[in-house]
Image 1 (cartoon, rainbow, N blue to C red):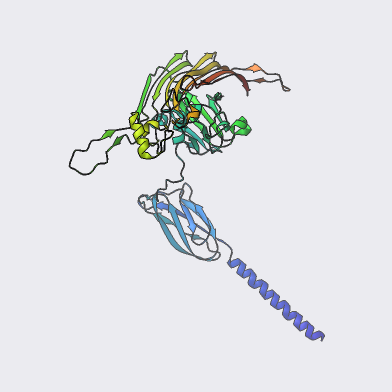
Image 2: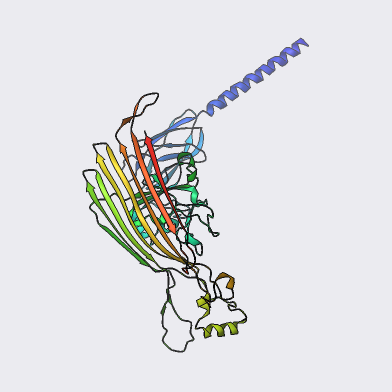
Length: 495
């Protein structure tokens, strides 16, 4: 028994030793082997730096240095090396790697025409968007504002900035002339508006009558003349942690012009589409007359000029005039108008007897008419080498005309039939006066008491704003309403 056990034990030890030797030799055979070489140009023989040398079928890739040399370690076996470089045709070479035998593999690359892949436009950011910032920021230049073809800030931002929406309202009281704007689908009072980095005052009108943002008080961007704007910066993300709760949707910063000794005159003329129409008539061989039938005509003229003050100061002033006609997208009323008269034939006969048509008794749906005059300024007065006083502001006067629902003759409880026997279309005349002045100082230093008792650079600004709107309704016997508000705000920022 003991001899048998010894024989079995010795045999087992021999088998174990052979396994260890086999695994050791196998491991040695799998040790990585160094492969090196250079990559040069076939036409010039010059070394090519930055070429990518990859082992096909693995994740191993190395690059060439300034001398065109590369160095890689791969396991023994048969491999394919592939070299790529922009402007050169890819090169592949088969190599057999033997354990313990370093190899040298050189490549020559032939220059080739660079072929671009398929151009994809959808989903790519435009050049005006700052893509290196943590959040998307659009910067709209004065040239883009002019090329947009629009005459008001709200409509310009609607066409250019993603997720910004603003449209003219209709039959909505004073909101016909103060467009409620939305950024990222949030309310008009959740977007912070700055002018030269300072808060812009809200309007004095509460949006009512079922319009977007009903019950909110937004900011009238259209009261700022486009001719005074150097650029518009739009932060399309929530910034309430930095600016406060009114920046939940984002921030719009309007930067006024600072140029001097440059006279800039702009003029914009336009009308709504579909002005040139062809009458629908049978082919009788008669000449076809083209009718000019359009609305919404508008004319805008702006003038901007800057006066230098010293070496660093300026006084830039802008004047702008806008005359915009109303639009009407309502069709003719198809209903009974007169008490005791029913049916289309009887109603048309009654209208004809009064010298009217159905169009005369229809309401007008579309943007209201407006005449707007604006004057803005932006000024800086240098004090010493590092400090300066600044001020900016302006006045905007808007005279608007919109309409309500038509009071038909069979609605005697809504008007006085003795005065208006055929009913009437009420007009809402809205007068909006908007003014603001901001002034302050920045730069320089003054001592601010703190635990560290250190000197800090501070900027102080004072803003006075006033706005008023009134909308007396026609006929004159109907009382009008007016609202006004004023605000004085001061702010100090130290760094």
